[in-house]
Length: 219
Image (cartoon, rainbow, N blue to C red; front, side, top):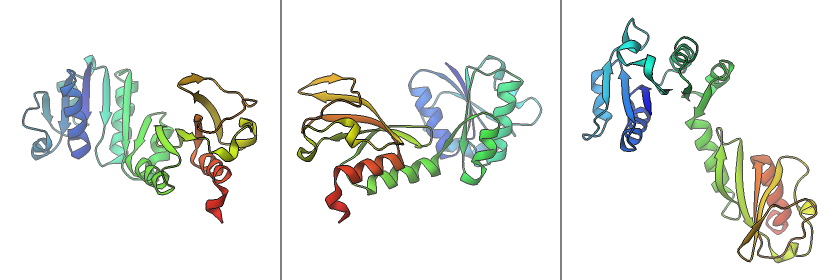
């Protein structure tokens, strides 16, 4: 894969290096030559110094031939503009944008871009972990708005149905593992203690489920 990374701060340098390690062709753009010092010494991708919107910079980076572009500077407006140009003018098939300030995220999303907000995602994960280890997040989508969670059915819910357990909104079953065998559960599935259940849920949905599973902790 041929990729351009715009911005060589901590995030950009890490992303570029990870892609390089996996054998991809990586070009990094930054207006400050000192920013390239963030790259590990063994990085062998290309670096292009210059303001990304200045005439010829994207061409020097080879934007006409790239498969993807990540705009990860600390300027949300610049990230949005660069990504929009890459997608609409150069038809780059895969464009991803970093959100630095959550207040700017709606603007970036208005362009129809794939947006990753480290602030929102990090806060979401910290909130999940503060709730304890009884609900283990195994995957999060977007910026953490929806996740896949795993929990073990306690003996207090033995012989009751999944429909009784799950909240009406914000939580849907994904899989159930019993005695080493996985199945696709339905609302009528009868639970057994020690079943391992995977659900897709919002943070509100998983909190409502946690309160049903462990009501004694709310006392």
